[in-house]
Image (tube, rainbow, N blue to C red):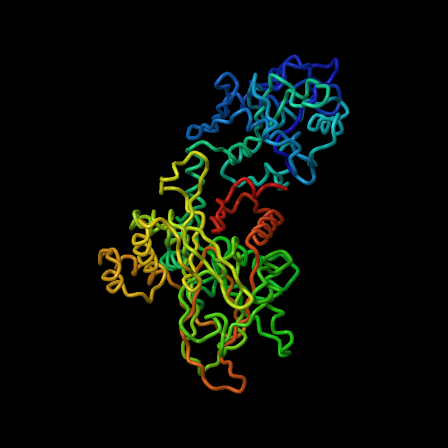
Length: 602
């Protein structure tokens, strides 16, 4: 694993190179008496390979210069991107502030000493650092990379000048877009020691950062906007859009192309995976497809999950898949149990346990953190049953389009709080939050509605009385009716236009969106629908209950997993298969933006 930054120890040795390795030699950066040795002995003759590197580096496009008297530095990655990094930010991300292997910070951001500035900054190739060693070879190389006066802060792979491309650490995950950047390091020298509590050596004035890591964590406006385009969910991220693009041969040009699955046609455009591959202990393509489908497209169908013939073991399969998804546990079991049975019954305490139409919604929106994923395993759907189709629609993408169609109504749902409730015998829960939440990066005007959408909260069956400013009440109901048109394909746009006062053209556009992007599919015996409950709304068409011996002709078994556990499990899986940094994960709807660099931490 590669650390965030590295330490360089000044070494005492009479064998010193008379020629710098490259145009921006680390010898000149540190102004210390470091020894540059080529090979394993005391040879100070530059080999031909290093000479070629020296010549090549005269022309590399990366540069760094002090700014604001050393309070920040300007790093140029290429002709298109120049980013500023401030001294407190760089200080905080020095690896000496990280305890390994836990990854916890030793100092808080409040420990920053005002007046600490950068005296020098430059960029060099990794091999320059590697060759600033004594004749003892690897052992002393590790002393260079880790301050020997303290505990080792992170493990390091020294088998190649690139720290081994498959390492998977903080700066790992070469994704092919910046193959050269991976091999270069930013080196800075501070005006005071980074070690506040002990006697300082020269090494305490030096910090080194991987350039690829810096680029991934850039926070200038251009970089932030670029990241937003990658992670904000829009119409093009819906699985139905991707499926249609794939069918027409226009899939390859998309930034996040559709996942390939032979059964997409069978399941209405949704990717499917075989349960037997999930059940296996091997990490195969099918398991990766299962996770990719959930996090990139929002849902997946699991096939060949035939229920046990033993009534006591009917929930075994949904438990198995749920725990595989989350990494070991199910969630949100207080009200209905870790697993629950969805079937029509008398005196039901939830509309889901009836046969009536169930409008698109999220489960448990009355929680501060609702379930991240829901699993619904079909163990019975009698042939004679009429209706009962499952429905899905991507509410994150719908909100993105809603802002384009009706920005004034969008603003109302961002600013006005809704009330989500669960009140019955044994349950008394309520939570207030706006229907749409936007990202705040500290620079934004909170009245600016053109910010990144990070969550949507929508659950009509479990919404209570709203409490907001009186001037907003009528506006809220109008905006609600408009957004509902985009989410529920059964709503009539003409009636909505007359009732709410929105224009008929706008109502028709919103209704057409709902019809275009609502997935309707009737689950078959042995199929399991798994979906992101924070991104996707789910529902069900009404159905006719035919008389049967046990009274149930449509029977699903459900379970939930936590979004954080499941996302963690996915990121770890990507790291294990060498894909960390190669998957751009769109926002999952949990109220946080997706941080690209975090996928590479180990």
